[in-house]
Image 1 (cartoon, helix red, strand yellow):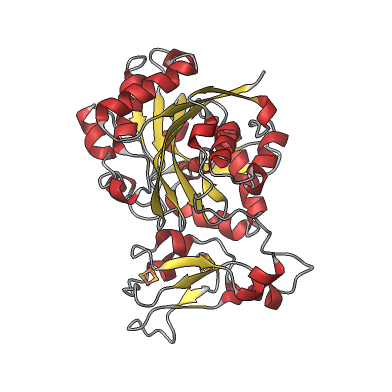
Image 2 (cartoon, rainbow, N blue to C red):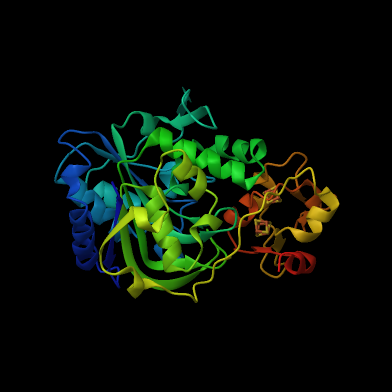
Length: 380
Ligand code: SF4
Ligand code: SF4
């Protein structure tokens, strides 16, 4: 059977317009009753990152969250919501993106994303051990609400990547240390999604983020909401809209190999508005395969000359130290020069595992990922 992906044109965040579009999209998949039953405990999992205002386009827009919540409430009253961000407390991080206010208005409690329990995933094809937030484990099922945006490590932040926030805060950087190869990191994300198995994925692509995502990019009108029970098919459809080869997203192949979903065109049943009407070849995303950063065949010295790396815009840096604090490399790959906090931190690229946590978390958006000149030449 083919995986169904519904596409619904939606050009504004007007509350009623979004509500109608969400209802239409879920309806094209058979209605909310296909995914949840009365009295099911359902967790709404928006992609929050660190909790930025809706204008920053980091998270799904609050009107999308509200529309999904309202539709889910027609089936069950037992909703909760939550996400574990890259830093900060989950409750505080929910305020700026507008989720806390909506949840309060709709009487939806915040789930526990500060604490978690260990889970053995014995059948896993790759990662067999996870600690998941209590809020995830205490729910009967999830609705994953993703944002259409770029990501430096995995090319896109989509339906699969959203589940990384189900791991409580401080445990997340450990995966970057254990899995410095982005291809392995992507396999872990697939295993995590196989374990959690959200029932439905909804992606906000009305105003998407292109360029320096997942936090520092710029807006691009894509005017679309995407819906599917198959996160690989949903992400592959997103890729086709921006003319990015789905196989350049490292979750695709393991996702299909391990039964999470399919990226193959002929195995996806597109319904709703035509895909062609959303295609935008000008969308700013890196259209190249993700390359492993660790390889026994490539000496670290050469690797540092060719592989994309984070760089600080000295004029934008306010020396807050967030990048230093959250760099998971030991010893740190970005640090104060001789402890001097009056100047921006500096990189030691030979230590850097290219997790891009610093770029993701910098509050001033002062860090971008750049490919050194030699890297551009050898990858031509
Ligand atoms: S997180 Fe950004 S602003 Fe803060 S010290 Fe690092 S580069 Fe500068
Ligand atoms: S410097 Fe940045 S990209 Fe490199 S290991 Fe530290 S946080 Fe990750």
